[in-house]
Length: 307
Image 1 (tube, rainbow, N blue to C red):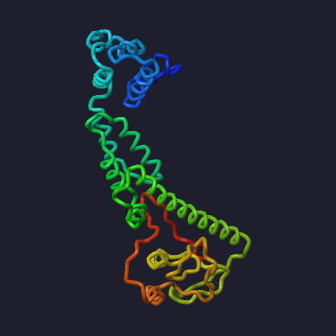
Image 2: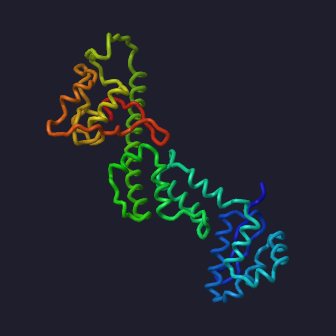
Image 3: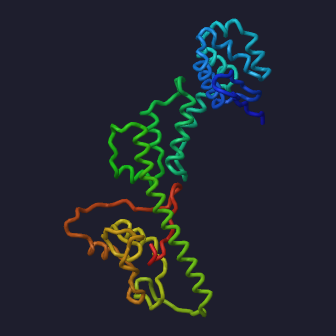
């Protein structure tokens, strides 16, 4: 693969150099910004700008290209020079391909802010080009490609439509940080639970017990087993706590002070239990599950009594 060129400048007041190598949209933008900074510091008139930086192109191909049309390029503006340079040396249809990359990007498993910055940087390379997305278009692109687990909190937040792109990104970043924090807490509780379970099993003699059904009362044990998918979904749908296994409570698992249910008295959670615990004043709603398996998230069976 050809080596990518780089821009070199010892000081803002010194002429920049475009070293030998393949020109990319990122390097072209860096070269443009560096040249403009040099013009500003040296107060170079517009009519002299191109000739003042042209011999800084050290790649033999670019140098020969400049000499072949030196009169035309020197007579034009720096903006015209940059347009011709990109057309001649960037990959054909680079702008269309870059726009397609921006429009096809999805958050996936990445933190929202990391992904949003990447899209903003890619779109910035298209500035001044018809393929560039304005703030409204970029906002719509980001919102449409959030991962499912972040889409729900964003919709619930009902962010004002008048927010600037910068402010909207900051608000969504806050929601995503909270989501990732909860996910990390759940993961840690799960890992600690199974670690302690393995340690306990290695220190105790093996015993064999039987159970007629999950719906029957559990026999006495030091701790309960993991929540089933159905129980986990039921608690999530009815504002429940994964630790004390109670419905319609105001606290989270990590803040629970009630503790896990007594293993010898525990019965499998049913829809009827959730309905019975529902406050009479609540209007019937169908909340979205707090955590569900998806490409962006990470959902495990929660160990009962831990989360």
